[in-house]
Each structure stands twice: as C-alpha cells, then as structure tokens.
Image 1 (cartoon, rainbow, N blue to C red):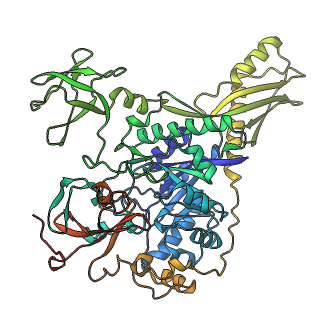
Image 2 (spheres, rainbow, N blue to C red; image 1 turned 180 degrees about the vertical axis):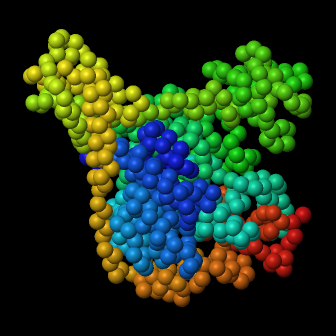
Image 3 (cartoon, helix red, strand yellow; image 1 turned 60 degrees about the vertical axis):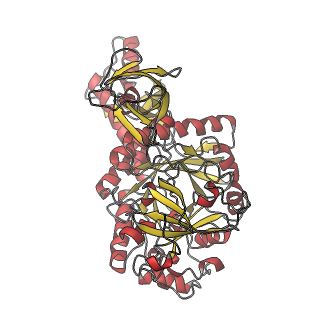
Length: 621
C-alpha cells in the first residue's frame, strides 16, 4: 500500500496539537531560529512536547531550518539540528547547502521549496545528496510533476492549499531590494500585497493603485487524486502564521477529502493512525483566503490574481436592501444566517474595500452597527469574512479530537491481574497488580460488570475502546482503585513504548555527483551566503560562485522576481494569446520603478530593478 501524508502547518505548540487532532499525518514547525517565517519560532522544549504528543499517533514532526545562513550562523544551526533531534523531530527542512558540508543528526533531510528545484536532474542530485523528500515549486504543472516522479526515488511534496508567492520561491529578491528584508532569510516584507502602478514604455498608465502582484490562494481540493497519480505523496498546507482555528478547519477539510479517496482505492492509505472527529463542518471558504486558484497545475492562466484586494474579502452573503443610518437590511442568499459578531465587507463605487462588524442582529436580515457608516447604495453585494458562529465552533472545547482504537485484555494471575493495552499502531503496554489478600468475588456477574465499566473509562485520553477481553478463572475481587490503576499504568506504558520506538533513519550517504548543468552558473541566484555553501557549490561543479544578493547587492538592475503570473497576459499584451508585439512594461512599487519583461519560451514574467531614473525611458504620465 502506498502511504499518503497530509502535512499541516504549526505557528506554535497549540497550532501543532490542533493539526494533529484535526487529522494531520505530519506537522511542520519552526524552531528557535533559521526558519523561513521569522515570526513563527518556537522553543526546543515546545517542539519536544509536540513530538511526544504527535508520536502517539505516529504523526511526524518536520522542523524548518530553511533560511540561508551566514558563516557565524552555521555552527549554531548545526547545534540546533542536534538539539531538535534529541527533542524527537523526524525531519529537517533545509535550503542552505552549507549545512551539507558538516555533521548533521540522523534525521530525514527534506529539500525546501526555497531551493527552487524544478528539473528531474535537480531532484536526482538532491536524492544523491541524501535527501529523502523534496518540496516542489508551487508553479509546477501535472506533466512536469509526472516527469520528475518517473525519474527520481525522492518522496515528492506539493503545496495544496494556502498563500501563493508571486515570485518563484528562493529566487525572489523584491523584498531585499526595496527594504533589505530578505525572503531567503525569513523576513519577506510581502511587497506583492501592496498597491502598484503599471505603465507602458511611453508612460501611458495601464493600472493605478491596484494589487497587481497579489495572487489568489491555492486550493487543489479538486485535484488531489490527479496529484497522487502524478507521484505526489505529501500534501502540504501553507500557513505557519495562521491561528489554530485556521489549522483545524483546513486540515480537517483535506483529511476528509483524502479519506474519501482511500475508501475507494485499496492501494492507498494514510501514513498515521487515529480517527478524527470535529464539532464543526469543515469549510475552507470560511477561513482566511484571497479567493482560490489551482495556479498552474493544468496550465490555465485565467484565474491567478485578485487585483482588487490583498486580504480576505469573504463569502458572499447577499445584497443590501436598504439602509437606515447604522441599521442595514439585507436580501440574504439562500442558506445564509447572520450572527452577532459577524464581519462584513463590501466594495464601494471606486472598488475600494470597506468593512465593519455586526454589533447585533435585530431580526434575521437586519443588522445594527455600533459605529458610523457612510451611505451605501442599495443593491451593493456584501461578503462575510468572519462567521462568528463558525469561529465559536472552531475554538470551542472538543472542536477536534483524535482517537486510537484500543483493545484491552484483562487476565488473572495467581495473586492478582494483568492488563494488556494494544492500540491500532500495533504497540502494546502492560500493567500488573498483586492483591494483598486475594479472595473470590461474592457476585461474579457484578465483578464482570464492574471490570467492564471501570476499564472502559478512558476519559479524555487519546484512546477509544474497540474491544475488551477478560480471562477469569479465580474471579478475584478487584477493588475499584486497583482497576483504575491497571488501566492508567497500562496506557502509560503503551505511550512510553511508542515514544521509545522512534524509527531509525538510515540516510543515503552523499555521492560525488555534479550539479545539473543549469545549476552550475547562477550568479547571485545560487544564494551562496557562507563559505561552506560556496565550497559545496564549487566541489559539485559550480562555476564562478558569486555572493548572495543579501550579502552583496548586485550593481544595476537585475531580475528580482520571476513568476508564472504575467502582467502582459493579464492586460492582453501576450505575444502568444493576443498576438501582441513584444514590449516592456514598467511597474512602480512604493516609488521605485521596475522593468517588466517576458520569457515567452518558458511562459514567465521577469521583474528587474530597481531602476535608476536615467534607466527609465519615459516618465509615467
């Protein structure tokens, strides 16, 4: 059976536990440093707590160590890797090749999407360097995925949900160019989510104050089986800055979709154990999103971006019927129920987004707002980006719980009893009690009922009783305290057995294989930020290694963003689809100007800059 992994994000320990309870087969989380989300770090102690809990279900913990590192940081990162290993981590997600030039703990190595691995030769190179798993770029199409999976033994991981970067990961320098905050160092300023202006070369404006680089969020909910058949074994949800409610909802949603596939196909199964129950009906439309796109999976470029808003607009709830100052009456769409505390959004006549929170509902369709609101035209479409009732379910006690099937076997000994606890993972724990003065029970039926009642009281443990077997010969009277002790100690021993049985990793020893030809001369795009990375690069056939963009900013305009999202295409200037003549555009971000060109052979947009005033042929009008 081929095992499929649902990989969920964790901002912190609480989010990690929420991911496990909601059905994740693996969780990725940042440690105290060197993660590509600088604001999502966690102590080693918290990661140990997460590992201890996750491993009860055989859920794996992947820790991000995926920034490029300075020489002074390398030894600290190595030390952290060993401490994470001791804490119970199962895998390290890394970007910097400098880490391969020295000792690493016996953990799986996963190649970060920041490595921008897009050719079969690159994946084969990673496999021979000891990596066991690699994250595909978000831009990949199904034919590209099939081509790679047919030529490598690496476990392939693909993003299936969450935010999309406009630029190719690991090769985007827009934030570093304008703010000094590097995406490769975990500090992206997300300039793709701010307003921009677009001009022709003669200065004619094509767009002003639009979110031209803000992509919709990714959802491959409809394409999971196609991705499995293309070779994907790990499905990754983006969101290490999201809260526990988001993690619960999205993880539970994809858990259900995958389980439905597994029910139909006996050749597939999940890679962890336990069944999840939720107090809510998972619905990804109700958690933060910018609208959804499958991006380039089927090479359809019609639905990538949302130029009007960079955030969560919400789900349509209907239209405004009338307004009486701060009271709004709606003609709601079928199935919509508004609640106190809901947040609503609407676009004004200038396509600017506005919003407010419902203070109280006066009736089913009329809301009162405890703030001054401007006049809004009747017929305006409204959206809900916070469903208060749904959020309460997401954050309530028992929002999601995960249980392991448990079999208990109670057997008498010469002077007491033994209880064996075996769960669906195949592990067993035992406990034994010796009676100080064993004597047969006066009422055997009552003894049997008492044993079944007390042993089945699993409370808020991670176990759900599937079967209880009893072997009674002497029918010893067993005090309630002894029965409770047997149950408690057997389950504790079961947990300890699973924690101690950590699978050993036998990493393939690196081979002396050269970098693929397309990777041997990458100028600053090789992201060589330390001397060890440069040594690795040269030792594997790299030519003329240049310092990273972050350590020495290149002279003159250089490509700072390469994207499958293309502004020429969006504005009907594509040389293929629209038969337009090739031309350059100019993108203005925060007062800085960039040249926008195309690589039509690979169907990509290239943003270069920032430009000096003398490099701009015509000033915008």
